Image (cartoon, rainbow, N blue to C red; front, top):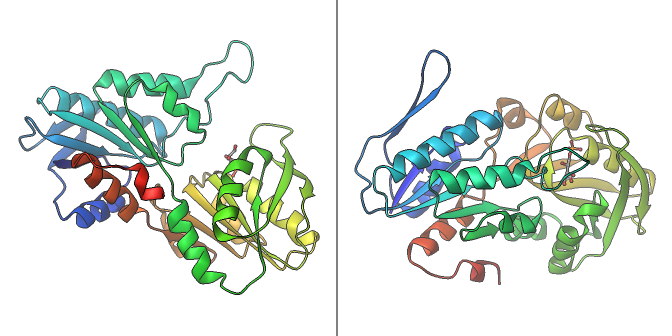
Length: 310
Ligand code: R5P
């Protein structure tokens, strides 16, 4: 098997390579003067089981295009099987038509990845599980929950905790985690008046005297989490933290979170942490390299991946 990394998250790719005890394959991604992307795989991949690692995070379009071009290069180099390992699958929030004459961009991206030549896809905490159905090739949706649960059990031992879904859309995910750590569930009934803005309306559940742990798939502007933290504290929560799989953290999100009442935000390394994240005093990164490494190893050996989560 071979591991090929795009440029979006070299640190994670290296950690996965270390977990699997194999080197990253030599792959050079260059730019023409007009910013076109050019890729050269600098070692033989004929007949190989190749895993391409790339999160389609900021700048999303560049990283997506890079992914497609790497897959194309591998296909034309006679790789036996190509698995696109996309820990953070960008465009996933565009998984339905929000209004007339709008696209379903998540489906378009799925088509592009398939058409480029991927035989399989591996991703983590898809925004909506049914996006797997946008692909007609095998798609493994891994869960960061086991890593989060281990961390929560260690940090919150003996404390009165409550798992909170910061919006109604995340209830299934939060309920699953609450069940596994044996904590009750509360829900923030958020109403978003305009795109990019969020407003907390109501807390469903009694959070008074509890350490609240919010769980979600994405933190982008940070608005959802910061507003929810204020609402939970106003209802008597002792402290509020958040475990979020994908730290998109666009624009001023890190500053917003640093200045917020959130005790801690824990994100995984599905998206490479920026310098601002690294120096922030209330953001911590939890690595999912062992999880992805194990899933890649099992895929290569044709072993069960779902049993990782039993
Ligand atoms: C929404 O459905 C997602 O699960 C997140 O809640 C959302 O993307 C967070 O966005 P922001 O951090 O910009 O409020």
